[in-house]
Image (tube, rainbow, N blue to C red; front, side, top):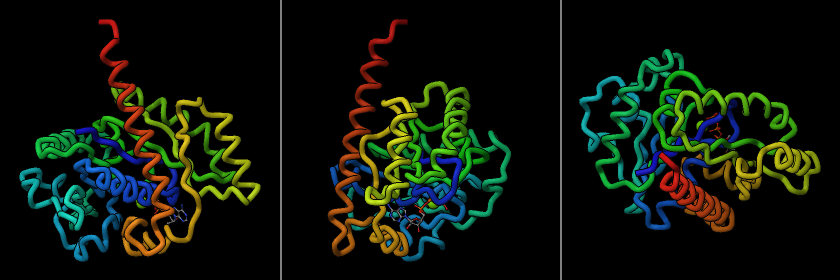
Amino acid sequence: MISIAIVSQKGGVGKTTLSVNLAHAFARAGLNTLLVDADPQGSVGLSLTRQSRLLSGFYDFLADPSIPMERLIVPTRLETFSLVAAGTASDYDAGNGTTGAHLARVRTFLFNASTRRYDICLIDTAAGLFGVTNDIISSADAIIIPQQAEPLGIRSLPKLLEGLNRLRITNPRLNVLGVCLTMLQQNLIESAEAASALRHLLPEEMLFQTSIHRDEIFIRASAKGLPVGVLENGKNAETAFDSLRAEILSKLAKSRVTATYQPH
Ligand SMILES: Nc1ncnc2c1ncn2[C@@H]1O[C@H](COP(=O)(O)OP(=O)(O)OP(=O)(O)O)[C@@H](O)[C@H]1O
Ligand SMILES: [Mg+2]
């Protein structure tokens, strides 16, 4: 199982949208996919599982790691797609927790998930790189960083790069898959310019070629906690996540080759 956390310092950049739709793209491609809502205010899969707020979830496990995985995992209509909700203990020491406090339990969670034949585990996190999110970054195999294609996005770039370096120190085996531009508006000059500035400023391998465009269908889908593809007229918006999935799989394959050929 490869665990991939979707993280960002800033809130509202499209982490949840990316997590839900990317997980759906992996699952549609036949990979056994587990989507974990690790945002204590999270609403992943609100309608995939109507009662998601009442379910035991990730934070219940952090509070009590004796809870068996089968009580946490919620199936969806798609056989290859399962969820773990944030849970009822979601105010449990959440974002304010001391970094490192939950490390062992986050690792146990990922280990337990990995014994259940998942290929991919995507983890949607709360904004910020501290507390539980930091412990997830320290435990995951890889991360993806969504970044809004807006002028403010460029201003936060130095902070982002600094943050990335710190993450690499806490988890040297962390595979930083890259930055994915979100809410791109090609027809809006400020957005297009911000995107091209980011392409210019970030090392090529750090930026996904696939960008997610701004489209109101994402707002409709996220209001329902659903992947866009299951909405009427959502098929078009869904294709970007198929490209992103392909890019991720190719990056993961390359990193495995590099790892194999690394001299000892
Ligand atoms: N590509 C897009 N086009 C239009 N709206 C979008 C797009 N992506 C996300 N949104 C909307 O922007 C808002 C924030 O997105 P989202 O919840 O995915 O961000 P987030 O990073 O998870 O936020 P938070 O940090 O609060 O968890 C939501 O209302 C969502 O519907
Ligand atoms: Mg979110």
